[in-house]
Image (cartoon, rainbow, N blue to C red; front, side, top):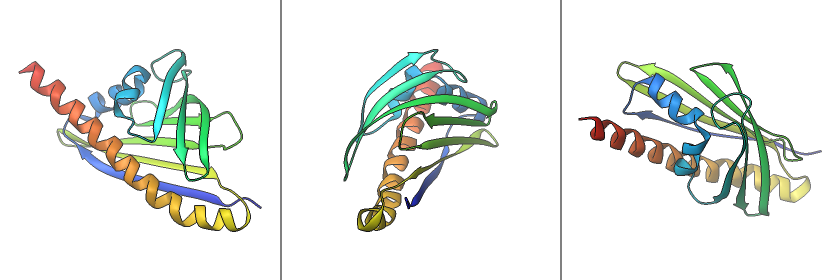
Length: 153
């Protein structure tokens, strides 16, 4: 039986929630926020919000995983979900909550891990590794938001 693996990270972003959500929903910007081990990011359909389809690769201890993600917005302006259409069943959820003139962004993910000993190890290592990666992603998002704000002044 496969192990369900969950990981998350959150950070305050120095921009209003509606602006941050717009950045996250724009798949052409997503590539700028993704740190290594994500690569080969491509917008396949759409490009903004629900109905968009993206693909990317991610390096992990188990090798390289190619993912094709469909986007939905269960709560437009607040929750954006990327769902893998392939075998890993990865779901990445971005939740944006207003905090005055800033936004609290939470990235969480879950997927069906490996089985057996490999699954046991993955269940320990993957959440920690993904937490660090998601913190890098949030830092890149904050850097982008800060640069955009500075260019308006």
